[in-house]
Amino acid sequence: MLINELLTLPGTKGGPYPGLYLFMGAGRLVRPVLHRASGRKELIGPMEQPFMDIACLKEDIREGITTHQELDPTNMLSLIASLTPFSDYNQSPRNMYQCQMGKQTMGTPCHSFPHRTDNKLYRLQNPQAAICQTARHGEYKMDEYPNGTNAIVAVLSYTGFDMEDAMILNKSSYERGFGHASVYKTIKVDLKDEADRAGAGTDGDKPRMKFGNKKVRKGLGSSSNGGIGTNDEVLYPTLGNDGLPQVGSWVQEGEPLYCVIDELTNRERAGKHKEKEKACVQSVRLLGQHSKGKKVNRDDVVSITLRIPRNPVIGDKFSSRHGQKGVLSILWPNTDMPFSESGISPDVIINPHAFPSRMTIGMLIESMAGKSGALHGRFQDSTPFSFHESGDKIAVDYFGEQLEAAGYSYYGSEPLYSGVSGCLMHADLYVGVVYYQRLRHMVSDKYQVRATGQVNALTRQPIKGRKKGGGIRLGEMERDSLLSHGTAFLLHDRLLNCSDKHVTYACRRCGDLLSPTTEKSSVLSAGQTAIQAMQGTSRLRVFCRNAKCRDMTKRDGSNDEMVEPIILPYVFRYLANELAGMNIKMTMEIN
Ligand SMILES: [Zn+2]
Image (tube, rainbow, N blue to C red; front, side):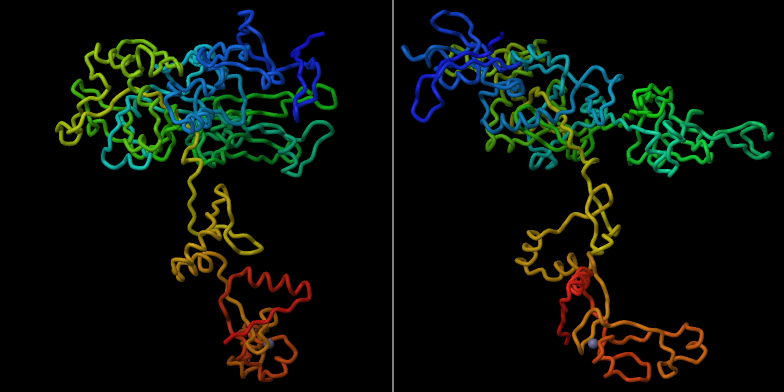
């Protein structure tokens, strides 16, 4: 019998039931702390922890009360939180933002890419080990799974392209591979589904379809076979004879990705590459199917892994490890980037306004530590709580001295020259090395555009959904703001003209929207010739079907003058129809 957690609870008022508790489940979360009396490590469980007195540091010990002490103050941090360098210098919400963003990085999720068939997998092509590492970084083997790049970051307001959390990227850095990444997507083609789609059904256990490429006999004059009509060519030359794509080939939107043939009818169907981006065929796998316990020796299912290159474009998201996210606003030519006396120009420029309100001092320290680490060729220990203001050396002095030893300014600032004019800029600028993460929110997955397009069949309003070419909803809050601005024309334009504008007849006499109708007029007096009337090419007569209205119209076959076309949103007419279906009549007063 294995006991995971054993504790006694004294009687407390309003607390849990007192007694001896034993936990024997298959798994229990326990963590080590120091037992002060015995000086040994003790594993404590989640049930006993709230009733214990555990000191974080030596100063926190209250004699006679404190029984345990933490082995390390960073034990309170989670895996992701413990990877943030100098997190003790940051405002706490920023560390929480980093915990959110740390999970959204395009990093190195695995090393087994050739063997994996995930629906979607992100991969950074040129990752680096971070210069600033916490103690946990090594413990969790993060150097083997890096998720960012050490970037030379300058903090300055340059050209205006770094306003409001935008960041300027050095175009040459981009061309050298900064932030380059790929997305791996796997699609599964099942012959059973293909057969269902073709309405072919199955032949017993096995589907009637097979993967293949049809042979086509080209004409006698075809130049591709030397003018003699003997060579057989395949229908989809980009695919192999087995109807599957070549590994390493590229597919564009609309190009065939695979081909299946109905064995009975000999009809073929090509599966197309549906996405707008071109993709490289990374691998093709034949999956044997098992059915009803019997092994079927047919390759019924094929999985195709595609690799889509996703190099940074304007609008893509980046972030440092301090909750400082930014959007790429422009790829700035290296020739126009500011440069230092030694000729170094930054990879990234961010705006100084990103700091005062957010108070991510940890990022400034990382910048200094990263810079001195790069200069001296060493990784910097950035474990939180390892420096203290009351200690013999504070972080700024520690890294400042290293910078000074390397011939740089103590505080990490440097004079920079304008890349455009070549003049020295009038303030020393903060330049350092910060580990930057590429996040997986990319514009190519998010942009929406629509002029005219599909509409909902029932309401005739534009459809929603980015994939289907839908629009962005002008919701009630947006409507309210147009109302409060008094921009009536804009409101009318959005809600009617660009939506479900509809022209229909309404009867002014009875106020009905549904009764007005049309019929072919066969009477000469309706302004047509006898031949027109007989041929049925006559124009339509508009009248109201309401019995009273019908009595009041002239019998000469002319239009009812009280029935007039009006403009309204189509949903309004739909509502009138729905209400009529419930025996409710809606009448309008039309002037
Ligand atoms: Zn009427």
